[in-house]
Length: 509
View 1 (cartoon, rainbow, N blue to C red):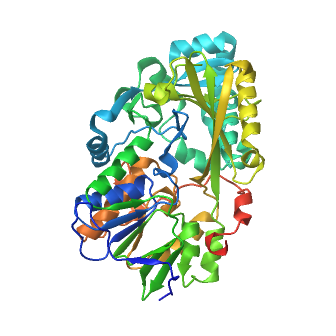
View 2 (cartoon, rainbow, N blue to C red):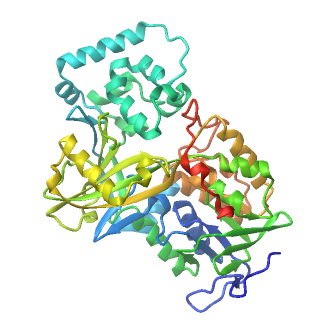
């Protein structure tokens, strides 16, 4: 067992606010994002001692709401839509009347024009015009009759099904912004998995006849949303955990997981050390491997170091005057600018923008932590964003009053040709830790949404409280469990080396 610093405090269980004291060691939850807080909430409701440790000063993880001078920013746009009834019930239980039903409106911005998404036939005809429509249709017909041959890239796969013209107009630029490489360097298998259920004819049918029953999951027309942004959900959940006697500690990064006899015996966080009954972790796998003592074998540490992430940053601009557009967000398909997506925060919820005479938009830039965009100064990023708004014809530069920058590291776990082998090796090691369960997006190194992350936490709590043996790695938000053992396809033919991969891991800092 490791030695504690002289100033350290040891905890067995958190004291309850009502004066009672919970018996036994606590369940220690690592990370205060959607998965971690869901676990903490469900455990606290059952009367179990629980401590949630969050490194950031705010809860919510990637789904937090940033607030600056009264303006609230949703980092990435978090729709609350799920096919899982138990997740939906939990959302309504926590927020009740504060959980608003909002219409979805999102469009593609292309060639200085807005195209509705989901597509509408009359709008497509009007915006593209007869010449462009004819070119797109002829391109589609040519692709339909042409032998497919070997499809190795995203570009080939999409062009074969939609035509080269539609690919150039609506797939190429945005995809390259999101993933940071040309579409010729993105694998065809990834396109087949990510665009499943949406074909030329299904899109055309939805355009002219609507998307009845929301059968095509890319074309959802409404969603729920907290009045004050997604962070309100996690802040309310935090209050409920505390009300039921649990603890949520922010600004408390986990520094060490001390192993003994195949279990985590100590969780060290700052000056405090906890003796956990169970540990539920949403920490990135890269972090979990490197803060564990004794350290796992070098091959596992090398596997953890090789895990990649795609990051992004938001530049929120406050402008004088009316909203720039009524959409929740727009996709920027213009190749001449770096911005990939623009949020209109008032359209998510009017309560996000405190001044009716001002507009507030968030320009999202996909990048790698440590690259040129990421390391630009905040002032330079605000200038870049304001200039691109002007270049796009959405707002003149002089209307921008001020701006704020929020960087979001490890936003998207990256899939490359080696990630499956790396994750499998780490998982085999994790499976040998008797009282540890990994949950959430980064905890499983899987690109999933908040509802999926919450469902993994629900199953982890079941395993603790009901003695079930759910395989957390198999949990899926739409079907509860994957019916087939099909790995998530990785996008890159050759994954780029990211600057963050060269940074020290947690144990080396």
